[in-house]
Image 1 (cartoon, rainbow, N blue to C red):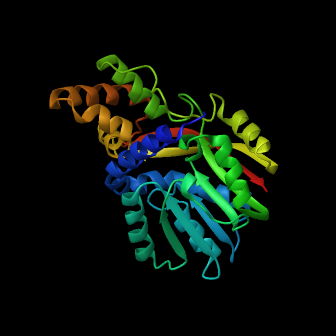
Image 2: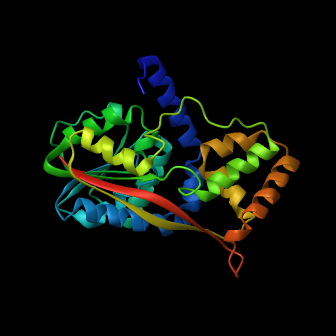
Length: 286
């Protein structure tokens, strides 16, 4: 997507405000999110061969992952720079780093466009579920490659498109369309492609990465109950927070009940909800 400077500035400011607004929700639900997501981070580390002493850049770190896990892996002789567009997300990431006693992490509030590190600054660059939300993914990948040291590695993860990628989000959107006047698609949002696995491999090779490896990985999101799922979505998703914030208590309750009904196939014997999600992990060398 070719983005004009004014359009890009407005897009970035909108993204910053949206993610600031759900930072507290991510902190609240982080144990549930990271219970599955940490397996993806570890696989990214394996693909990128993250080792002690390395310099690592984590783009779109949110409230600190996989940056903090990477900081534990590179040790005190290494360094992790964690960046995110949302200052409030980074405030929580700093708090978590302090709690964990990690002193080898630096935090920078910036989008990818604002990063001005010299070429070859990092041994590894990570971006977990952030590439497809960045303006102009091809240019972003080219910039990432330039910031890598010779033979350095980039590892990323993107969601598979459609219901296979994030079933709960897909079901929740369908329920919203049934109840509210919701458009069928969100206009103006940049996307890597409609075919995540093939497109990601193609874009990385086009950006100049070598030894590109792409694989599918399943992770499970577990929440206490089907009734909790609406609150989870409102807390962590800017889109659903905006969608439901101006609805009446009766409308939200109708939505909550309808979503809980649709999620019954994922409810376990103890009443918890376990939803398998499909993500694409990829890595390549400069």
